[in-house]
Length: 360
Ligand SMILES: [Zn+2]
Image 1 (cartoon, helix red, strand yellow):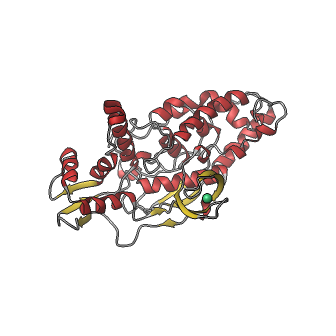
Image 2: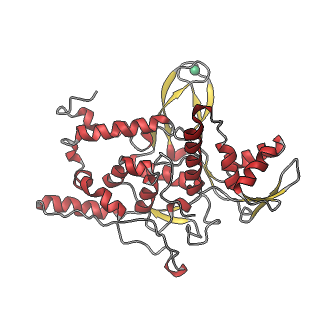
Image 3: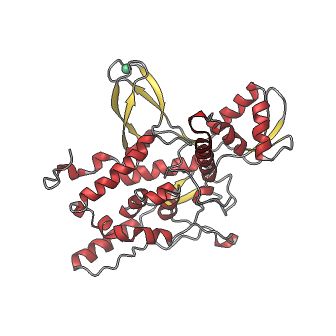
C-alpha cells in the first residue's frame, strides 16, 4: 500500500499495456518543446510556468500519513498559480483569467460508484470533481524522471481532481475512466489512432470519439467482500479489484523478469496479476504460494480467473468497432493507447506558423 513512487516506465497505467510508441512520442514531444520554445506565445500560461513545474509538482505529494475520517475530501483550495507575475497589466489579466477558468470543475461519478472505497482511498459516493489539464500538467507528462518513476499520471490526477485522493489507491477501472475524461476535457473527444487491418494488413488512421465509449457502472449486488468458487477444483476464494498500485507492481515485476532473464523470460505477468487480485484461495494468502498454486490449478480454473482479471465487471468499455478503409473488413480493437492520447498532434498548430519551418 505504500509503493507510491515505484512504478513502471509509463506515465499511464492502462490495463497494464503501454505501447512503445508512447515512449517514442514522449521523446518526440521533448524535442518539439525545444523547437517550439520561441513560438508558443499562444499559450502564455504554459510558457510562463515551464521552469517552475517540477518544484510545484513536488510540493503536492500524495498524503503519506493516514488522515482522519473527518478530514477526508475537503475540497482543496482552487489550483493556485505560483507564477510571480511581475509583467505587464495585460499579462496579469491573462493569468488571472486563466486561473479563474482553471477553477471550473466537472462533477463526475466513477464507474465503481465508490462501493469499494472507505473514504481514505477514494470517495464513498463515487463523486469527484475534475478540471482540465494546463501546460503545467502537460509539462509533468513530458518530464522523464516523473514518467520514469511512474508517478506522472498520479501527479496529474492529484492536481486536476479537486478532492484529496490517493491516486494510486483508485481502482484501475476508475483510473481508466478518469484518464479518458481528462483527455476529453483537455484536448477534445476526437482521438486519432493508426490502425492496422488484421485482414489485409493495410494501415489507416481512424478517429475514435471518446465521448461515445460506453461506461458500465458497478452493479447493485456487486460489493466487497468478493467471494467465488473455482469451477473445476471447487476451491473457494476471495478476491479484490485491481488498483493503480497493482498496475505499478505488475510493471515492476515484468521489468524485473526482463532484467534477470532477458528475452528468455516467459511472460507470466498475467499470473502475477492474478495473484495480486486474489486475497486467498482456501486460506492460502501468501503471494508466492498463490503464484505456485495458480501454476498447478486445472486450466479451467486458471482461465476462469484470467477472464475475471481481464474483464472487469464495470468501467469504460474500451472495445472499439472498426471497419477497414481498404477492404471493409469489420473488426474490434481495444482502445489503443498511442502517443496521441495525451499529445494530439492536430492540436499543435505550430506547423502552420511560418516562423517554424523546421517541422513538416
Ligand atoms: Zn482491410
